[in-house]
Amino acid sequence: MVTCGVSLYPEQEKLEDIENYLNMASHYGFTKVFTSLFSVEGSREEVIDYFKKLTALAHRCNMKVCGDCNTAFMKKMGADEKNLKVFKEMGIDSIRMDVPYGDERDVALINNAEGIDIEMSNVFVEAIGKAVKNGADIKRMKVCHNFYPQKYSAPSLEAVIRQNEYWKERNIPVAIFISSQQKGTHGPWPLSDGLPTIEEHRLLPIEVQLKHCLALKNVDEVIIGNVFASEAEMKAIDTVMKKAWIHVPYHEELGMAADMLPHGDITRIPFKIHMEEGIRDIEKEILLDYPIHTDMGDCLHYMLRDRWPRMFYRNRDIPPRTCEKKYFTRGDVVIVNDNLKHYRGELQIVLKDMEADGQRNLLGRIADEEIMILDHIKAKDVFTFME
Image (cartoon, rainbow, N blue to C red; front, side, top):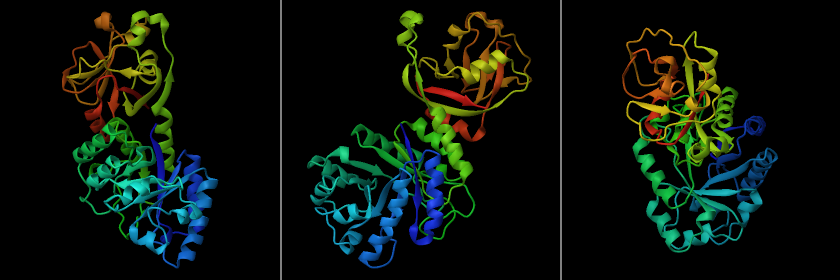
């Protein structure tokens, strides 16, 4: 299950505002705080005192704290790869190394005696590979992408996918940053153009960024990079998270087909749909209430084809409805009607232009900003719809 986090830049924010923000984030299911350790000025003792207060706030909200760190900060705090006691004193749960050592010290750091998890910047592929090869415990580490405040500076979607697949093949969890669209948000520098990992995410609604990450299937954690995200955005993320995971029982009554039908703990991609006026109750029930729309994988050409509803609704009539469109287009959601009774009840998402020949009723259309997610829906992926 993907987890969600928020970021803080404590040198720019009041503890009172931080406390309110963390209380809100916790309420909506966020479980992590990402913060910058080396941006807080002051003596060693002042830095320790500050982060004790910050981590105490986070822990009261049942949120773990990850501190962005570098070797210069470790030296300032009297720490090294074999001694992380000061981080334990500050209440830090994990450390993200902005720049690793690049040698055997990374192994000692990852396998530290204090039980602090280590996150490595995704940039240093060679250093991470070397640490794993030399005995670093991958159960104690994660890869965390950078964020990119400057427009057009973030890597492409294709590049991030390649990197994520590389880490997933090695069983190393991956975290990326998504971006709030709230006006006046900021990161560590005075820029307000978002803080995404993927450039294509920069201007998308925050819940669409999350859905996209779910569809990629190679992201384990998403962190809102800029602050302060709005309550509406956190609520939207919480809604997606609650819709995305479901437990489906095993349907013995289906016989041999029961093993083919998705069951157990399922991850779903919840598409937002703009529904057509006048759709019937049976159509709406299949669209919104049937829990596990999925394509078996042999028809991924003109459509995503969910055959299963026709088994459960085979005795229900679905009369044809008139449609003004001559062709259904990518992102349209349709259902087979009584004019093709053998397949009646099949729900389909259109991928390529299809003639509106009277055999399918138009149920609605996926929100324009979410159609790009269709690029990543593969065989047996499960999807659902949000009105």
